[in-house]
Length: 252
Image 1 (cartoon, rainbow, N blue to C red):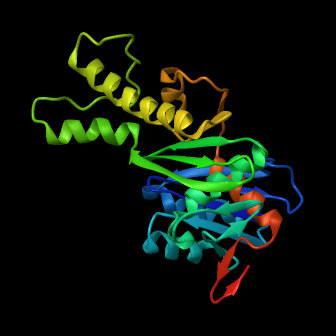
Image 2 (spheres, rainbow, N blue to C red; image 1 turned 90 degrees about the horizontal axis):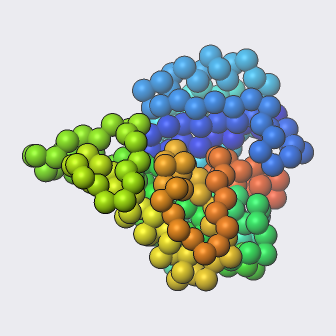
């Protein structure tokens, strides 16, 4: 069985899949914060893991701790010039964040033949453009919804910290808390809407922890699809395509 691992800036998500399993057909899955990372050893010890594929943007220390918990040496998912039907159009392909590359592969696998915007809304929000024939053009990176709000609270003495479960404001806010949340939502939605217009996209795929909060703020001229775990869907598509990453000095 293949273990897919998406180590992000805040959480580590994982899923166990069969080699020939359907897209998103997890046999087991879970997610922990960085502070809970050590709990993964007990969870993974119960699984029949024969291979592992790791997408890591959380840094080398997290990567080393994850490797120490695994019964097999994982392949490190890396951004390549071409993989799983997607051509990486970054100026220097290897410098594209591996999570963005995986998300783009996942989006192209879910909606082949369509010009897409894929927005992954986590600690950071990444908004990327993919052509109908499978070329990753590039994209935008901005602070995520929570990071925007907390940055205002930290750096502006009179502004409060907004709770993560605060109600969405309707229209123009008549209090400071709602004004902050409204402004942050407008910034997220505006960036995604602008990307859709610039690209002439035929669909927009939205993923990440903040996606359900951002989706109602979007006014798009194209279909919007909420997709869970788009990075791991991309990892799965990459593994099925064969060459997905590196292990030591050789390609997996």
